[in-house]
Amino acid sequence: METLLLKNNIDDIKYAARLIRDGQVVGIPTETVYGLGADASNEEAVGKVFAAKGRPADNPLIVHLADFSDAERYTSMIPALAYRLAERFTPGPLTMVMPKNERIPMLTSGGLDTVGIRVPSHPVMHSIIEQSGCAIAAPSANRSGLPSPTSAEHVMRDMNGRIAAVVDGGQSEFGVESTVISFDGEDAVRILRPGAVTREMLLEVCGEVVIDPAILNEVGEGEKVASPGMKYKHYSPKADIIMVESQLGDFTSLVGDNYGDGVYALIFDGDEAGFPYRHLTYGADSSMQAHWLFQRLRELDDMGAEKVYVRAPSTDGVGLAVYNRLIRAAGFEVIRI
Image (spheres, rainbow, N blue to C red):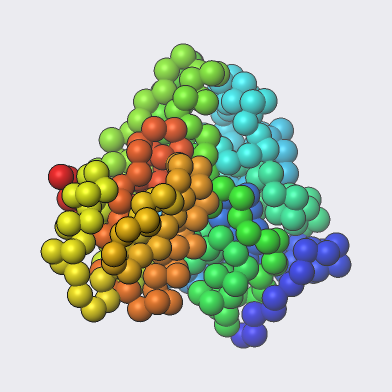
C-alpha cells in the first residue's frame, strides 16, 4: 500500500474524509499530537488502526467529535459536570470518559463499557470530522511504544505503507496527548492521563480533582485501564531513557561518570552553558518541554543515541504530563539525587 501525503487544502481534506468514511485509516493532525483516524463505529476500520500501530487490543481509543453535543449519540449517560467542563475546555485537549452505548464497538473501547470523548480544536481535524460525518477514533499515529508524532513527517516515517494517507497540518501545538478524566461524583473528576488541561485548570470548574496513582506508577500486567497511556511502556525511543531528579551539578556529574559512546543528555534550555557532554535541550518551562519532548526523543534516535539521561521536569501544571510521558519512556527507572 502506498501512503499518500496530503495537504491541508479543502480538496485533500475532503479526500481524507472520504477515505475514513470508506473504512480506511488516515494520519490526521490534532492540536495535541498526530492521530491515526478511523470511523469509530466501524469495527473493521478500527481493527486496521490496531494493526497499523501494533497496539494491544486492551488499550482503548479516544473518540473525536465535531461538537460536544454529538456525545449524546455515543454515550448512555453524560454527567452534568461534563457539560460544564465542555463549556470551559472544548474544543481543546480534554478527553472525558463516560459510559458508552452500542454505537461504539467493544474493540474501539478496549473491551470497556466506557468511551473517551474529545472535541479537538485543530481546524484540519475538525474539518475532517465534519466532512466525513463520522465519529473518529484516533490514537497517536506512531508505532506502539515509540514517541508520539508531532509532525506529518513523523507519521510518514512510522506509517508509510501501513495506512492510506497522512494529512499535513503542520507542527502540533501542545506536543503531548490530551488530558483524560473520569467522573468520581457530582463535582469530582479523576485525572487518568495528564495533559495541557491541568489539575489547576480543572479545579476552576470542579470541586475536587484526584490524580490517579497510575499516572506516576506502573500498572499490573493483568489490570484493565480506563485510558490510553496508563499501561505498557510508552513514548520511548530506541535508546534507553533514564530520568534523573537532581540539581544541574549533580546531573552533570552523573552523566560524566557514565559517559561513553552513544550516551547523550536531554537538559533544560539554559543548562547548556558549560555542559560538556553530548546533549539536546527540550525547553525552559513545562509548556515548552511538552511541545518539544517527543520531537527531541525522535532526534536522539536519528543521532544514534543508545542511552539518554534526562533532567526530570517539575510535576506542577503541564509538567505533570511531561513527567508522566518520560517516566513511561524510562520504564519507570528514575535516579533521585
